[in-house]
Image 1 (cartoon, one colour):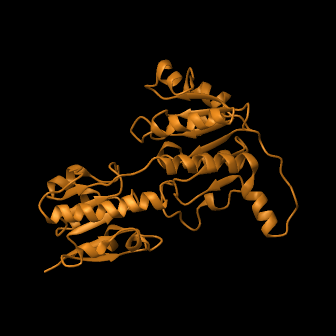
Image 2 (spheres, one colour):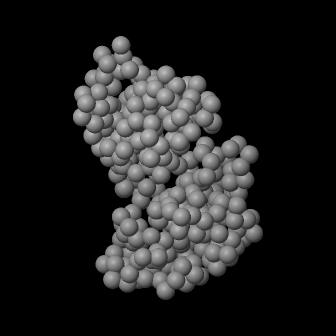
Length: 319
């Protein structure tokens, strides 16, 4: 008898085209879900008969409650090798193996700079004006050359962001609680004396921190008020690092010039969310990792994970 596998949150319906699932055909019945299950009841009803589930990043959290509601589950596969929305202890307690896949850091870096460039040159507004036969040239762009780029976090992606900033002729400063002057200098940045200093002096602030108890809510109303009214905030990292209610207030009140956001506390973003109507917010639907190369790695290695598990030799284990 075949085992059943559910592929969740396949928004574009492309999971089948980015991997050769036919290698599993004799042993696995695979079904893909394009829609998002908003609650545990919906999820349990849809995949309760499945022994294997494949999740895309953190789109569907797997909490202790979810594991308890899926007693047949034996293998959970996540794209990437880190997923804060999976309770690994609960997985182990319920006898569920968790495996991951490779993930590439270049796509979110590229999107970060796409947002910065679009904000600086007001491309969203100007593109709409052309399409709707609006005014020809209604904005004046902000130069990147000679401006200050403030990076919150200088890890793999933050370090590459610093390199690109320098290529544009920007002054690059960085801050995190554990960052040293030596590490900042090695990445081509200058260590800011404090978070406040970075916020108060930067023209563009980009978030590249890992979500933790120390970084959750790091950027709130007080921090946003420190930024210049001509400055822009970009977040392609984790939604919870920036207080979204405070950000909306900052954008409405003109505390900052604008923001580029790719991550949200609730995804997909509700139809009535205020982020959908703020003219100085450039919002993208969590596209940071959504590229052909990443999807080939995610789904291709998911097939490998399933094969290895069924052969009794699970690989890329997280739990």
